[in-house]
Image (cartoon, rainbow, N blue to C red; front, side, top):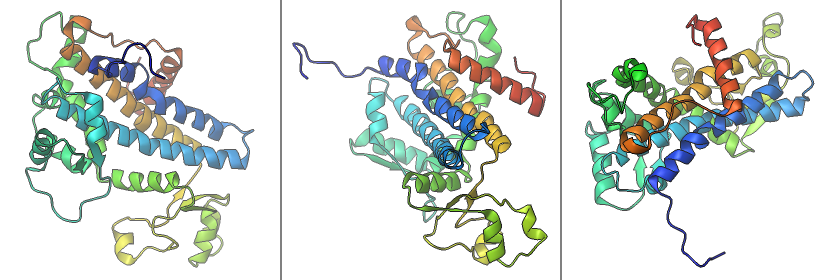
Length: 322
């Protein structure tokens, strides 16, 4: 519906505020609800299968979100008068591996293509980010749009955040390296198959073991309950010797293993989203110094999840996180 005035385009400041308040957390809340279904003894078998599929699809979406945002931030820092939402709209991620070797100048080539054209930019995100990771810790914040300097003003970085600021490049590297890992390609394949729905089947791992010639008592160690099996290569179920050696899977199982899913939730999904929030807040605060955002999270739902995450990390890694 049109009105007496034309609505203005979304500004970068509006977009970042919305993203940091809500956008980067949507997958966390969704996947936490799916984990609740898996851990609930009263959930039906169908409910658990639906939650299992949704959980791992959401995990794939978290990675794609993070890849997109870090790449968009790295392009936005070239000219912050450009629209960040428009940059995201121009990105076309290629989540599979490239067929051949990419040039050593790949990241520079992508940036040049972005600057000199207005077309969509096809990009292999892991290769692009790995190129950026060749920079030093002192250089990394700037390439993602954070105006980092060794001796910041107190107005920009209060004393209680100075230690974090001094190590910001190291923390960003720790956030980006898992995203750039080749292991992400399998997760991307799995999430795409779930997204397309019919490219999966329901089967017990024990049944697959029997088909492959295993007999009792070996089979009793395999999961007997039916679960989701993804069909990454159509109807094919057996890997070739080369694929087995490379630890590739053509029809992997997604198992409703609540403890493992809980680990994945806190150590991957929540961690990745929290890193986006922290990095995005530094980007906002160094871009709009007079309109700084606090790092404190206000949402009771998110504070509960972050508290749970701290408890999990304390128990798992003895990290003493408050």
